[in-house]
Image (spheres, rainbow, N blue to C red):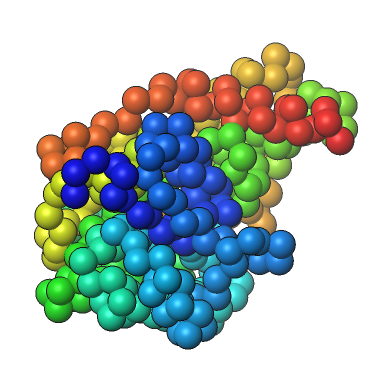
Length: 318
């Protein structure tokens, strides 16, 4: 394809945190693309139920995308743990319905599948340093298992002709993220304290864990590149999206408390500890750098300030 005028990008999960960030990027930097945003839930103009095969077929057939970025998922590990059958239906069967429809109705389209670093699971404990895309998928959580299974399925379908690009992003955050995730959960609690809505006490889970964090604005650049660049697609196109630097959750909490400028008591809440928690998760994104020319650009300090600022404004507006 020559020029963005011919790009027709269908995005599932467009109403979510990452989908919204992707839409803003495309509107700001790739405005000549045609973007078809499919969200979920009531009130969505283009709602789509991935478990309704006829609805999926109709959407793909009518849009005729040149690329499809599949973000729709049960994305919070806690939600998947509490409703595993629903998570399997959406994350695995829904992905199958979408990929099969693309092969039937838009076989030349690039299928950009958004997996998860949680698919590596137990492999983090057996590998020294950041993991590459070649380590085994050994998920330890329901969410990780659903994403790993769909990842392997899309990889297999690539051998049957699906023009697949698979991503395994590590933890990412940014302004607008739900407080179901650790950075936003901390930021919301601290913002409520600063706004005088809560006592100066924050309740936390495991602060010793180390995670590889990214800014969502960096992550969606990779997804956009996979949809827009002239690159091959196929079984070998699987990419970690990572910083390569693990950060202790304690350090992130300290950074957020510093944003508040006040003394806050930290209390451990056993209910906030995750089962099967992995001590250190860190990824090697050299492949994405070499093939997609992707590297994280947003300083983590900026990310933290933006997340706190978002929750602070929200608390003051209530």
